[in-house]
Each structure stands twice: as structure tokens, then as C-alpha cells.
Length: 275
Length: 162
Image 1 (cartoon, rainbow over the protein chains, first blue to last red):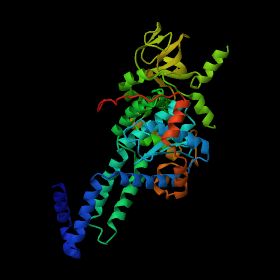
Image 2 (image 1 turned 180 degrees about the vertical axis):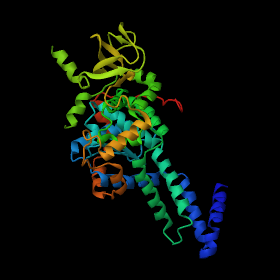
Image 3 (image 1 turned 180 degrees about the horizontal axis):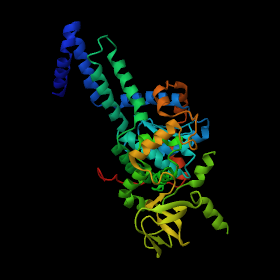
Image 4 (image 1 turned 45 degrees about the vertical axis):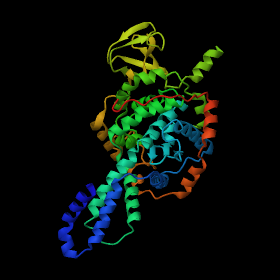
């Protein structure tokens, strides 16, 4: 039903152009299918492929930190966390990006990144786990994937009338999704998605046996920093203010208190992170 | 003494004596527990120096010189960020960061992950391949967790909107 209504709308919108350029009705129907496809559930295989391609672009902006021990350490922490979630079978990958900014990123399907700048501000493995768990929560809840699909759907709908050349529909759609995905890192998710990832992140870290206060501790570190520090600009643009996130986490006080005494592993962290 | 030294090493290192204030009326307690004796009441906005964190508690020194523990989540640090929250503050911050008009804090030439570079980045397949090579197996991660005495447990997520 929705497809029919959508197509009717598209045809209506395109009628003057159709008359003027004598365009092929089948072509419009194809584009209509495309729009429909971009709004429906992407299957897991495609979710992983889209995430992989976005991860490759992210690595084009900043390479991995050249420290294999650190990368393997972060992958151990991350994989252990992911194993405690509802999607343990995803091809989870974790990487430290060589960038001075403080930030962390997730792409659909399980590619997770944290910057060297953020790792340098952490004091324990529980803090690292808290940040990775927040990003894992984005993947579990498909926050980015949903936002990407929404943007791509709008883009496709907008280009229907203007695009008359025959293109490979699948590739075109993928390209739109990728562009939307890269753009999302600069624009950010909805605030509610971020606050949900904070709550779930606290639980995931505790499930893995870490001090549940790791993520709040990182947020407090960020809150204590000078917000004019240019290394914070993108994170502050794309996330609620740390103080607001800490306020929201007060709802999690029972969980935090129940699992606040678990290991922080500050020494193991210090041994694996060269300053 | 040796035990004390070990404790100091284990404590997550807060920068010593970080100025902060409390966001609501609370109490300074003798130990990091809600049933520990109260050292002194702290009124909303009371200024303290944060010394160390232990779980959900932070050891602080109050203005009167008394030391004790307060709930970590009641503390907000008094950096330049303390007075600036919400969108307005962030917009100002971004403007400063972009234009560099503050002249002091902005590091020019910071490369890497700013919005523009993210938008213009080209795929780096070689780095992606490296990333795949660093992946841990479930078995390796479980062994790593056991070494750190991390025990998996079953905990429910909070209810929607909770």
C-alpha cells in the first residue's frame, strides 16, 4: 500500500517533466522500487557490507595507530564485550585511529573505532570498555543504519525527477547509502539514540564484568575539559553535552551501584597503552 | 606502606585536586558507601577538590578542609565547560574552534577527523585489511577476560525510555 501511494506521488510530481521529456514510465517505476528498497529492512549481509565500506572511508580520513599490541588489546576488550550482546556473531572489528581528536565511531555491522586522542584521556580498561560498549550499542540498535536509510530515501526521492539517465540501480543505491553514512559522522545521530547507547553501554560493560562506572568516568573527563579544545569540536557537535549525558545516566544509578565494584583494570590498561 | 603504594597505583588517576562542585544537596561521607557515616552536609553548588574515584564514589576535599566521599554523579567539574551546557554553548564553542578567535586554546593544523575531512575521505582498503588482521576470536577474548578476572553475567537492559 505504501509503495502504491509513494509511486502515485512520484508520478504526480513527475507528470509535467514526463510530458516535456517524454520519459519512460518504466524508468520511473524502477526508481520508485529503489526508493521503496531504501526504506525497507536491509538484510544483515548488506548491513555488514555497507558498514565495511563506510569503515574504509573513515580509515581514509585517519589511519590506524601504528601499534599492533594496542590494536590487538582493543580487539580483545571489544570482542569480549560484543560476546555478551544479542549479536555476538557479527564480524566485530575494533580499531584505534591515529587522530588527536577525541571521538569514537561505529559503522553498521560491527566496525568500531576510537581515536588515539580519546584513549590517551582514559585511565582504565573499564573506561575503554565503557566507550566501546556505547558504540556496540549503536550497532545492536542499528542507529546509524536507520539514519542512513532515512537520509538515502530522501535523497533518492529528490533525484527521481531530475535523473533520467539509466544507471545501475543497485550501485546507485549503495552509493547513496554510503554517502549518507559518511555524512552522518559529521552530522551525528539523534540525541535519544546517543542517550540510549549510554544506558545500554553501561549494561554491556557490566555484563562483561567491568566496573559499570567506566563510561560515566569518561564523560566526566570530557566534562572537565576545556570545551574550546579543538579536539572536542566534532564530538561536541555530534553528541549531547557531557553534563547532559551524565544527568541522563542518573536513571541508571541502581545498575551502576550494583556493578560499580567490579574490576577497572587500570594497570593492564596502562601496560597496553603507550603514552 | 607497600600496601598503600599499591593502592595508589591501582587508583584511577584523576588529575590531583581537580576543582568541582556538587549539583544537588548531598553528604560528604567517611567511606565510599551510602551507609558510611556522614562527615558533613554539602549544599548544592558547594565547591570541592576531587582527589580520586573508586567505583561510583569520588574522594573530595571540601572548602572547609574536610575530606570524604561523594557520589561521583553529583560532581561537575569546574573547567571552562562547567558554565556552558546545551546547544548555545556548543555553538559558541564550535565557532571559536573554527575561527580561532580565542587565540589561546585552539590548536591549528589538527588534522584527521574533522567534519570536512570525514566528508572528503577516500576509502583506504589497505588500512581496512590491517584492521581485519587485528580481530580477536571469541576464544582469545574469553582467555583475555579470564586473565583480567572478568566474569560474564546476565543483566537486563533498562526498559524503553528508562
